Image (tube, rainbow, N blue to C red):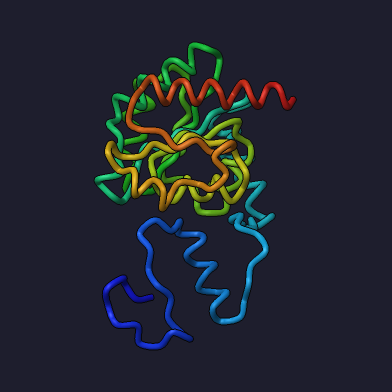
Length: 211
């Protein structure tokens, strides 16, 4: 790519950079330039079938037998993290409505998920216990995923699992660039408990109508 105002080294091999391009479409434009046009903007992530039984065992060990909502409160990027007490506030409301909460996170986030589990009624903590494939199967079994703007949100998008993705306040350009393209199944929201609760409720009701 070359940025506007800079010299284009070779019009046949370089594309003009646009800050407003969504990352998926930016990548597809680049593939098209080298002769690989894409017909589908959707993300895809094939899961290892062997990991399904490990996920079933993990849920059994956590005594999760009812429909559940996944909460992923961590992120490697500090700027992307929503305050844990806000996740607790949202999760407590869903738990009161009868939704089981499953907390996910990487190995370095075990402290975070343990802290959340201690304050969310009935929450199951699987922080640090999943690899990418078991996490994928875990998401597939969920009614909804609520997460920061981080890798888990893209995995949910690739697996077509309904999600609410929380973006930093005032980050409209970042949201346009990274929010899932399917804005009906995946809702990008600002850091506001009422916004997150409203979208989570809307998504769960949509799921009930489909059922």
